[in-house]
Length: 166
Image (tube, rainbow, N blue to C red; front, side, top):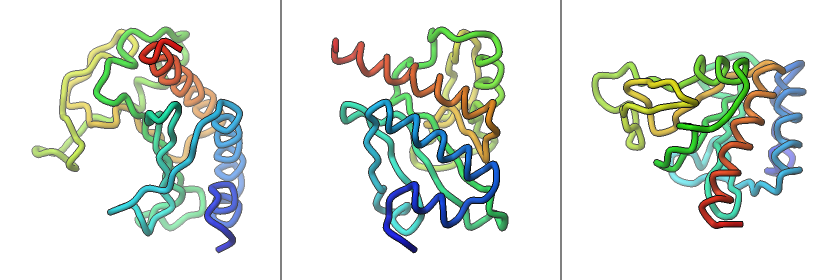
């Protein structure tokens, strides 16, 4: 593998629309001053990054997934850091519908991972039960969904800016 820069990994692993959509999203994140950090622990040997703004997590990205055998697998999870980031955020109806479709509802009887909160959460004005710690999850998103993910990042970035009164 050439280097550990996320764009290099995307270029080597993903193909077709998955590659183009992932690179488009990464470019957007870089243009918005996001910092990419390879995660440690369980994620250390995977192509997994935590994306930060002002030292606060914005989202998480996994390129390829050993459980998937195709070359179009990439996943993005939101981060709301336990806040009400997406509770009252404003978005157009189309964006809301896409985000609601991707709410990470835990189907497990127990927590699906240590960070799973299985909580009741309001996302853009709609309530959901058993929401995981990462409230929104996108798997191999299409171009329209990537545009929605950018709005999700914008909402989280604005939440961080308000927190720090920047």
